[in-house]
Image (cartoon, helix red, strand yellow):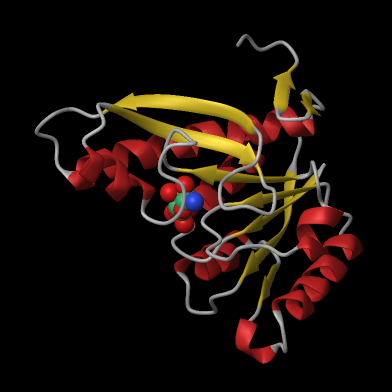
Amino acid sequence: YRIAVFASGEGSNFQALAEAATAGTLGGAEIALLVCDKPAAPVVHRAERLGIPAFIFKPKDYESREAYEREIVRRLEELQVDLIVLAGYMRLLTPVIVQQYAGRLINIHPSLLPAFPGKDAIGQALAYGVKLSGVTVHFVDEGMDTGPIIAQRALEVISGANAESFANAVHEVERELYPEVVSWFARGLVTLDGRHVTVAGAHG
Ligand code: GRF
């Protein structure tokens, strides 16, 4: 089972997925490719250190979003990628990828969706003053963080805790949850029916 991870930044989720693959806890999945739109991003160095192949591109070198997405799809097909895993990929996808990979394209978002979609979800949640937030893994559709929900983990916002410590707690949960969800896919446990996702053997 082969996954491609799309990332634009730090890559801590990418790293967690790679470590799970090595440790044998990713359900037998391997990371076939990193796709990155930011040549200077730290995630690029992580891929180098881990020996994971990468397709790194500059969107400006292409005439349109569709043009670079067609290039990405060519590479995914070449490598026979089964699942696209977005991990801090800071671009909306067009139908070129979303339609071709419908049901095989997931994202992680640092809030309990549908609350606080879009950028800086952690900052949005803290500014709103919620007592509970968390992490969501969901299928990707053409909207912004609107696809069917696969898994969520809640986290209490401890009053008095600062933004940084809350963000660290959220990221720690992400690094646990995302490899677990990818292992469900690799083991063929996930079924999508309309907006409803079932994970075989899981409750709720
Ligand atoms: C994560 O918080 C993820 O939920 C969001 O972008 C961030 C990526 O972090 N979509 P990293 O690059 O994996 O460290």
